[in-house]
Length: 109
Length: 113
Image (tube, rainbow over all chains, first blue to last red):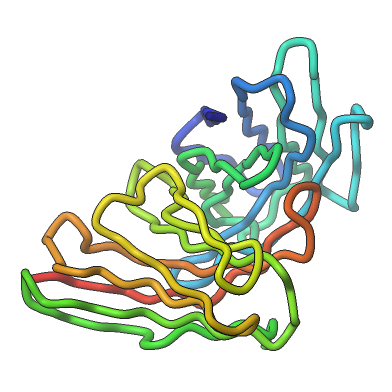
């Protein structure tokens, strides 16, 4: 089955800096790649997604890039703010979704 | 709130006892999923359902069973709870099998003592 690896496991940045989280997947047939944000004690919530026929997608301060050849995709957050502090999960799916282990992002004021 | 609710929110149970967690949706979505969340492992799929009475195993299904007798309800049962099943359990729903983001419930924190 699909295997998703996510790096780094923890990331600390200064407010205003950029943050990048990277994921790799194993099954070349995967065609949908969402990113979820989970605040402490809350449910994961979808923040952005990309499909296999698209290389990049942006939504305000967040963007996702996909490299199908290398089977990796990344989340980019620019101008980070303290409220961006959370755990971020990447996922890949052909059918049922498989998740990475998560990245704990801390944005220091 | 998001059309999906889980119950109970918290539960403490003893080793060897049966436990049932409930997921209820009001979105009429076809697909429902149970995940468990543990530190360092992210979210791992336990079981999923693609319709009434249609279920299948995920990557960590041992020790768990599920049932879906109605579109809106998906039950997860631990037949004989073990300490290794202490976890946070999330239910999720989607309208498509792939290519659609999941909506998660608020989670159930289960502690097996």
